[in-house]
Image (cartoon, rainbow, N blue to C red):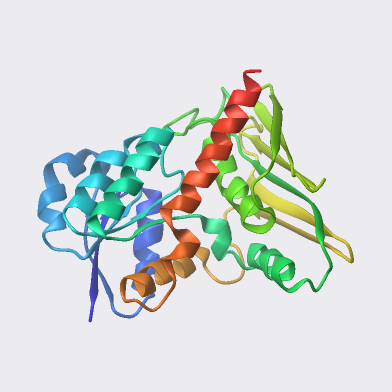
Length: 282
């Protein structure tokens, strides 16, 4: 059986997803619509596909996602799922009513280095995970950046969502949240058992600075550190986009557990992002 995919968003991310699907057996990308084409063309595309992949700006995810689910199509949606909790919950509720998958691109769960931390937590091979620090540094908010603001949102959602999901995946829900910011946001997550995690997100790096992400995980018996600097060369190792989209296809076929990238995981990360926004307001 061939799974027929339609992609909404013909920009860079849409191209990344199309290329990833091209590496997966039994998948056919039958159409791509740019942002301006979605309103006029989505009904025709929905008639031809089994699933829709949404790579549009987060603020406009809700209408096409709900339309696809109401039409009985499975959906994969890029992160951030939504900027408002109401929109995220509406998409989740539409998926539950339709009995269709709504998977979200929580990419760190498909990156080998981050999965290594999860595996170590589950196995206990390095003892207890004591602290976790993450960072995600870009320049899109800098006033001199070529793409200043573009369609990107607040760094607590645009950047932190991936790391907030990672932290909750390996440490659970924090008991308390504090944060400070002056264009660069740092959040401290305190857990009921005394552990803590620190999340930093910046959109204010000088223009021309490479986008940088990383983490430092301190266990009782070792420390695991990882950093990727995006300087024009693709990162080494497995393509995480292909990993997560292959899983989406496997979930459609009933070969994988959909819980890993389920919409509820994205909502949990969004709720924590909104907690940080409230902490910043005092």
